[in-house]
Image 1 (cartoon, protein in one colour):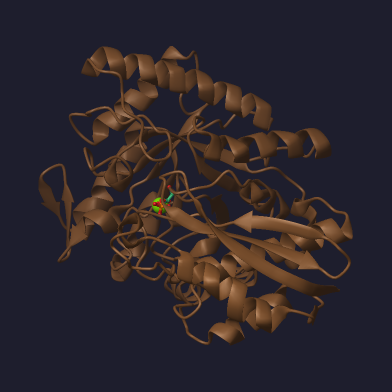
Image 2: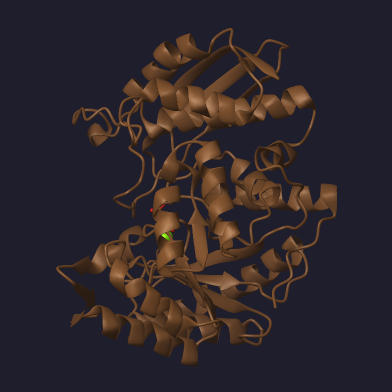
Length: 421
Ligand code: 2PG
Ligand code: MG
């Protein structure tokens, strides 16, 4: 049980230098804690609405002063002095106050900042680590640490579109610990930096999440170079380390066609293309290989990938229980990319998780391309027993905050990294 003394908010900057929302929550017993919300670039159209000021003279319209004012004004007024037995009760109060289906009145950024700050203040009050507090929201216990998927190469919207697909990620598949997995990924990343410098003549620029973004001559060369870097680092691709891909195909899909390396592919050809990759490269997880609007073709995609790689939905599902339910009924995916700010409260994200689990799906807990130094995502992945975590590369402090927190949780709990078949 917690009585909210007050909540308050400030505008802070994210890893792209864009404004985002920070909020703090004080409980009657004296516990105080704060949290900040991330923000995407390759956003799904079904995401909850981030409230932005729209004043073109300030941060190109991206200011969050109105969202901050909503926390300091109506949200604080509605919560102050009230008792909440659970996170669900607190989140229900926020939803009722907003009253819109997509959080467009108060802003999902304002609402989520408060939802998270309350969870963290509750952890302080209950004298438990944040991952335990998160676990209570789903009525579970942390049992495993997630398998990491770590950004190696970037394209798409995170790297100026030099190639269509957004992320090629390293999966330290054989690593038994987070510590070992990070060390293996570092070796692959260094090998990839050297290899692409030699091949493409220039030091590879880094993209929004710290992935290397050299001028690849084709999209598939990202996969070829990833495998080569793994070998150069002394690993056996497919055994020691594997690959995850975020195709992020909604962002090159228009009028029923995927514009891929100068070709206009229909959905059938797109499924053939990515399924062909599974024959050649050790890909274990394939995200948004079809567009968020290509509903009728997702079941064929899932059938084609079979058990070789996860059919993982990001923009397609938007951590939205209604979309997940529809995808389960259609047999359209077998894995959920869970982003809490897709939906806007912890409780609704927990409902998305519950639904995905009820269908036997795997779950990847994911950061956004615009992140802050806040590390709550690592606690969420552990507290909710995520199968995978996706944070970005092993460079840049906003990413490392999460990896370093995973290291701390590993040291503190001794939990094993989840075992995959
Ligand atoms: C994604 C995310 C994170 P964004 O597409 O999975 O990589 O990107 O936050 O820009 O939506
Ligand atoms: Mg994605």
